[in-house]
Image (cartoon, rainbow, N blue to C red):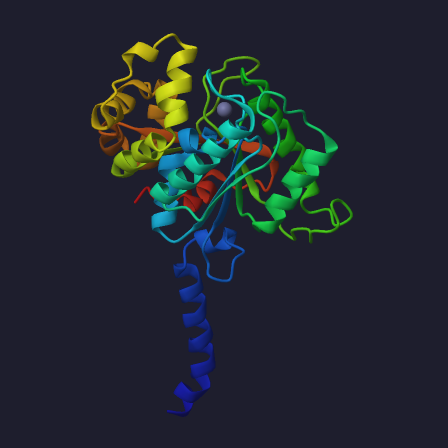
Length: 303
Ligand SMILES: [Zn+2]
C-alpha cells in the first residue's frame, strides 16, 4: 500500500496525460475553453460561404463547433430587376434563413456595396476585428485569382489581415489574438497562376439535402439572378419542390480528379469511390501552418 500511495500522484499524472492525448489533436487547435473549434468563413457575397462551405459548415455545427459566415458586401447588385437597399434587405433575410437551415451560429453581412469592393485599409481593419472577435481557430476565404473582383479583393483583404490579427497595435480597439488562426481557401477552378490544391476534401453526402435546402433559401440568387446571368431563366421550374430538385441537379459539377485523389488519401480508396458530393479546401501559406496530419485532425470527419 505505501508504494501505491507513493505511486498515486505519478499514476494520476499519467492518467491526466492519457486523457489529454485522448482529446485528440483537435483540441490542440481549439482556443475556446469548451474545446470546440471556432470557424469563420468569409465570402464576398451573401451566398458565397454557403456555396463553397455550406455542407462542411453543417457537419461542424452538428458536432457543436462554432461556425460563423461573414459576407464582406451586402449583395446589393446581384439581381436583374431590383437593386440597392431593397435587394440588400431581401438578401440579408435570405442569409438568416440559410444560416438557420445549416444550423450555424451567425451570418453577418457588412454594409459594403456589391461589385465595388476595394481592398482598403478601413475594410482590412474590419476583417481583422471580425477574426479577433470570433476568436477564430480557422478562417476560410477565396483565393486571389478569382474571376470576380469582389471575390478577389475579399481574398486580398483576408490575406492582408492574416498576420495583423496578432499585432496589438493594429485595430487596437479590439484585443489581438495570441495565436494565429489556420487560414484556408475555398475551392475554385481557376488555373492561372496556379490551380487550386485540395489539401482537404470532405464528403458532404450526409448533409447534401441540408446544403441544397440552405441554397434554396436564397431564391433571389439561385432561381432568379444566377440563371438570368447565363440566359437560363426559362429553365427554372415555378413549383417550389420542382425547382429545389432542379437546383440540386444543375448547380453543382462533378468531383474533379484532384479532389477525388484527396478524398482517397483521407477516406481510403473504397469509401472515396462512393462519394457523390464534396467540398475541398487549400491551406494558405499565411497564418498558422499545421502539418497535413494536424490539418486532417481539424476536420473530424474521416474515421
Ligand atoms: Zn460571390
